[in-house]
Image (cartoon, rainbow, N blue to C red; front, top):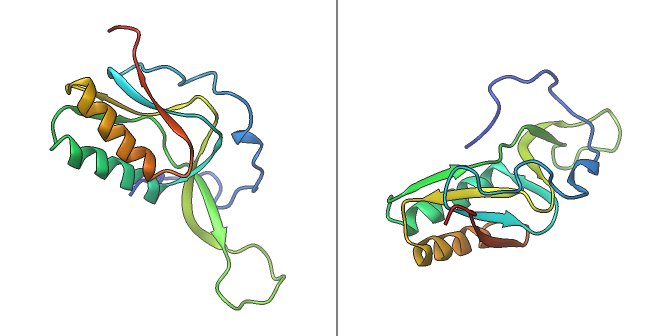
Length: 139
């Protein structure tokens, strides 16, 4: 699973303001021919990214090339079960990628459009956001 090698800070503030608004960068298919674009903002865990990647790779039978254009940099903390309130913030539990509306999450090349569309649809079911299939302007 994806996680950063090094971090400047072990814990970060919980603010969700980085999921509001529309993506200005990363809103076009730039590496491949087809892409999966988010239609709403939110957070995607490293496990969800890996599940989506596996479903796409399996469907295209390891053909073509797949790019993951998001990375889970943000650590989320969690307290142990049945621990009383107070006594500080919990320990880092997992990592998430913060996503804005319009961000391209995955890109694909080297397969026909029908196969790519079905693979992206399967990947979209693994994610907690609404997504849509897009193509690059190069076609």
